[in-house]
Length: 433
Image (cartoon, rainbow, N blue to C red; front, side, top):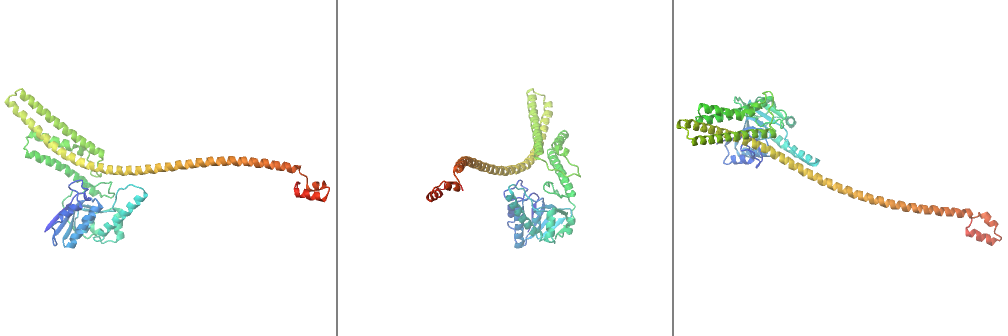
């Protein structure tokens, strides 16, 4: 049994799908049910990558199929970038169109936190790079140092260049152009080849053409009159004119639209839909007035056809506008959710910093109180010491005054009449040495 699994959008973790086209490990697990030894599985890849953990989970499921005896082939149709290359290398066989591209680089992420959190995240990313390296070594005939250099530099190469990078793959001549890079952003990739950007522009032009073709097919199915066809074409031109006027020159990369630009475009389309609905209501009201005036039968038919014509125009345009608005709202919601997550993280960090600041202020207040108390105690001690010093100075002054009044030993002995008096005088100590 031969089965095909397509990875034509972003690779995500389980529970994180933004669109039906996103691929998760659960999607691949459901696909593998019923596959037995000897079956052949082809994984068609045209993806910019996505979640590292989601991609590694799919790659490990492919390795389990290989061990089970299932023959797996990775077919690179347009672009196989980032974690999609790990899924490619997990397959037994790789087939590339000569016009397709491969891109390998180190994993990247967005993180907020203190220095400890940033170091922790860097260590986790190094481990993820090691896991990616283990898959690359099975398909690239390069040393670990050479592979690391390719990852550090964010390396792009086409199928015709695969042999220069010693990739074990089969390169076939591909003539068809694939819509490979509609979601490529220069904010995420830094070395995008000019040829890939040209294909991105061409893919966007093709999408515009498909919009026109879809509306044209609906118009043909409804067998509109020549006048109605003209009006439908005007509506199609009105719906697509915003993208047409913002079209970038072929030699310049197409920039991602900002949230404000998406809002503006959604508002424009919503306003257009409202205008068409109002015109439809006006036509219905006008038709009702003319019926009330009993318009002749031969004049009623053209007016009814006109109402039907405007109604068809409104239905076609509203359906197309709703489709475009829905897609833009999904894209914008994805950006809003990412910004909300970032804001939540920022608020958490801000709250932690405010708590640290409050604690620091409390410590400073406590230290100031202690300092003021110590200053007061020192002031009292200084005052006491000053008083004691003054008393000591006064005592010394009295001692010195008394000392000046005492006779010397010779003078005192001279006034003693007997030896006994002399002994008593010496014992009294009332003399100056």
